[in-house]
Amino acid sequence: MNRLAVELPGLKLKNPIMPASGCFGFGQRYAAFYDLNQLGAIIIKAATVTPRTGNPTPRVAETTSGMLNAIGLQNPGLTAIMTEKLPWLAERYPDLPVIANVAGAKESDYVTVCQQISTVPNVKAIELNISCPNVAHGGMEFGTDPEAAYALTKACCAVSQVPLYVKLSPNMTDIRVIARAVEAAGAAGFTMINTLVGMQIDLKTRQPLLGNRTGGLSGPAIKPVAVRLINQVHQSSRLPIIGMGGVMSAEDTLELIMAGASAVAVGTANFSNPQACPDIIKALPQTMDRYQIKDLTSLIQEMAVTPV
Amino acid sequence: MLQEKLTVCRQRQLTADVFELTLQGKMATIAQQAGQFVDVLVPDQRYLLRRPFGITQVDAAKQQLTLIYRTVGQGTSILSQLKVGANLDTLGPLGNGFPTEFLQTKQHVLIIGGGTGIPPLYNLAQQLVARGVQVTSAIGFGTQKQIFYEAEFRALGAVHYATDDGSYGFHGHIGLLLDAEFATTHFDAIYACGPRGLLLAVNNRYREHPHAYISLESRMACGVGECYACVVPAEDQQALYKVCDDGPVFATGKVAI
Ligand SMILES: Cc1cc2nc3c(=O)[nH]c(=O)nc-3n(C[C@H](O)[C@H](O)[C@H](O)COP(=O)(O)OP(=O)(O)OC[C@H]3O[C@@H](n4cnc5c(N)ncnc54)[C@H](O)[C@@H]3O)c2cc1C
Ligand SMILES: Cc1cc2nc3c(=O)[nH]c(=O)nc-3n(C[C@H](O)[C@H](O)[C@H](O)COP(=O)(O)O)c2cc1C
Ligand code: FES
Image 1 (cartoon, each protein chain N blue to C red):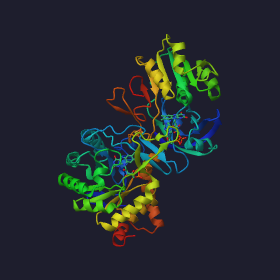
Image 2 (image 1 turned 180 degrees about the vertical axis):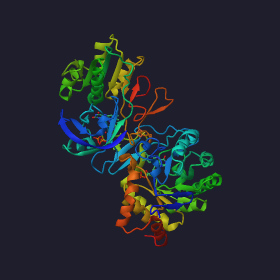
Image 3 (image 1 turned 30 degrees about the vertical axis):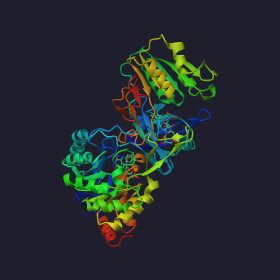
Image 4 (image 1 turned 60 degrees about the vertical axis):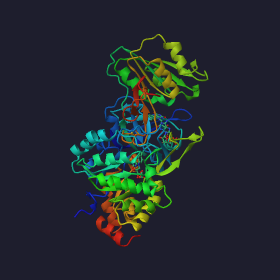
């Protein structure tokens, strides 16, 4: 029996580890470092109806044990992703489940992308990005207003051929309000957390360092926030959670699962170590031994029955 | 493109804040184009983003690769404390270097560098001289005390220095040195790397030159072309290029600096 296997709506994963959206692009360059078939799944960069150019530079800044980014959802657009990026993955890694991150400025954009991208055979699930802090329209506007989140999720579920996971924003007073709304609208699960809004000032110029002024904080600095929010949503909803936020190691992975996640995405760690995902996968069995964890499926079940 | 733990085999201080770091590993045996860079993980868990540095010299036989860096912040300060034998997790070689395949023996190139822009240009000059190409260099610094690798560059051809304060060589900005010395000289190729002012000066003066190239810097996250952090707009604003993956070297007139 495979101790690392986990199952979620639409996703039969040989292990719980997948690169997080935006931190791995479409995988092509990372394929030079390792066989992507080792991954449980891959979450690709946000797709929007038409290509997006993103925000002014600088787009990234380093913070203590973290980083700020304000990429602004730059991506080559739905057509290029469907005709170039997804086929590239399908040809080389036919068994690798893809989760497509979907973004937009208005409801009809999201609906168009969900409808079309969910017909691509290797796309097994959608991650609805209603929590991007770096765009003026769309993104977090939907993710911080329960009525907007409900309406958008419902419209996207109606047209999507695959299960829909909604990506939750940590930039909320009570994240459960949004979680309840998207659950009621028919979401299959949650992914969480997206980045926390932050800012850095350059002492020399006395100006914000990022071209966009503010950006999203990610990396180990946010892990305690992720653990707490995952746990909070886990206690208030039955839907499965793909957890993320500062995961660098097998220990971090197990911590997010204990908080209530059923699978775990790895973002910023890819920048420090392009082989972060396979390194974590390799380290999981011995780390599980150390904490007397027989297999992940039973750990997840245990956490469902008796949450921490 | 490799991820490898390179071993520090030498660290030498060149000026008050510039260091030369020689690293050992297989990466040095991978064929590389001058102008490519490596991305170094600072050996301290608080720093997540790798630091990009141009490659100054490669010795494939000894499996050694040399970087030159200025201590400008926390990451480079930590690097300057590294002792012989320490390991440094490094990605490389990355990006596209300076195109040189069109050059023939006896042709003449101009290399234009400033400050910590000169490391990749030294590698380039060495490779070109080895191929019998004639190299002239124009190098700018703030002041004489900041100059490093003078003997190394002089061993490869004629070198003209410019200092902002006039303490050594031409008094003034490198653009003015170019006007004073090279306005009428024909060069088969132009290669430049340095601060933004220098790149602008070169981009303006050699926009129409068929083989003029500049190397850019940008804040990076992935360093390999998958995160869209490091982009620079095309001069006509119709496209965005990734400095790490489409660059760092671009032809003049191509990007908005
Ligand atoms: C392609 C390329 C080649 C380079 N080659 C050299 C070289 O040969 N020698 C040299 O001295 N410097 C070079 N630089 C600049 C060098 O990367 C920075 O000086 C260094 O990253 C600063 O790190 P720090 O931790 O000391 O500074 P901090 O200011 O503490 O760094 C904070 C963050 O900002 C980033 N950052 C700061 N300055 C720069 C910069 N100028 N460019 C890109 N990122 C920056 C750092 O990488 C880090 O993520 C190069 C940059 C690029 C993009
Ligand atoms: C450079 C960068 C780009 C990102 N792009 C996206 C994106 O396009 N869509 C999205 O939903 N999340 C995006 N994210 C958020 C991550 O997917 C993830 O939720 C967050 O970074 C927390 O995980 P981490 O701490 O492991 O990085 C991005 C994060 C970073 C650092
Ligand atoms: S640094 Fe990620 S695309 Fe260039």
